[in-house]
Image (cartoon, rainbow, N blue to C red; front, top):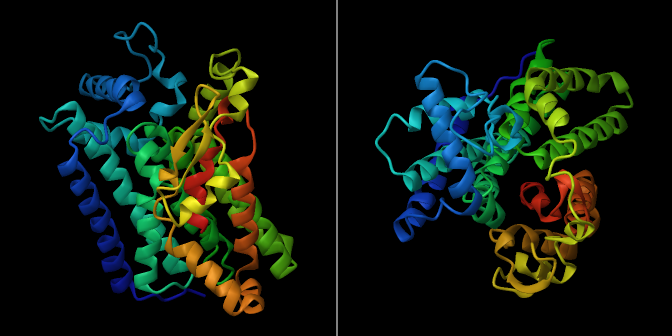
Length: 364
């Protein structure tokens, strides 16, 4: 049985959410033209994208580069999104315009933030939220402190992959819908492919946790294990499409500097429990363990955009705790699990546990 949906409010709401995000980013650019061009983005990521654009202009897939003495194997660097159709298309299009490096970085980040906002809006609408609340979800997913301060302006791979997590969630839930067509297994496949090739191992972990959570939730609610097969098949198809990216990562990461980290790195950039009031007050300052493995005073900028959701959650728990827990018990379990992961020491490719924060914001 097909589900009929009025597309007009969804389309206008999604575009409105995306344009609001673009408008906010333009305000940031007006205040600081270099806001999206920092550290790794400036030194490593954007020069590689320039090389990718050059390679495409010469008619070659940007797998290897003759112009780098340290990173000639572009396919081996997972974070560059070499196998992502979307990243490559965005790079080729943006490099057609006479922009400076900071402007190119801004255009690439804003394009991904726009798509992220639309995906978060679509996910919220599919879960029964109003248009206004769905726009609210989109703004939090796209403009939270971690995404702006780290993903969009430093570790572009984090943004390139996380852009597709709401879309993957949306597609996975559609694949679970028994009232949809027999082809529903196709919904998550393209988004899983884009997420994996986006270039951030942490987001792949987020996806796997999400799929496990959705599977357990569906089996418990329906008492039928076969209901999750379309979703699992679609996810497997997405991983199959992205195989060149993750196979290269698994092959080349062994013995690399990213894998061989000192034990001190396991404790860096974990979310300290004392920092949680930063959800309400982003200027809240406590000691975080930074890249030097020393505790330093750090404001909770990564928690920005977290004010309304926890306030509403606390109010609901105070007002009608039993009813609220009954309605969102599964989401509460996922939220608490992700928060715990933000505080847990991790190693190798998955060091710096605060990288779970974008997922925490999305669930919250």
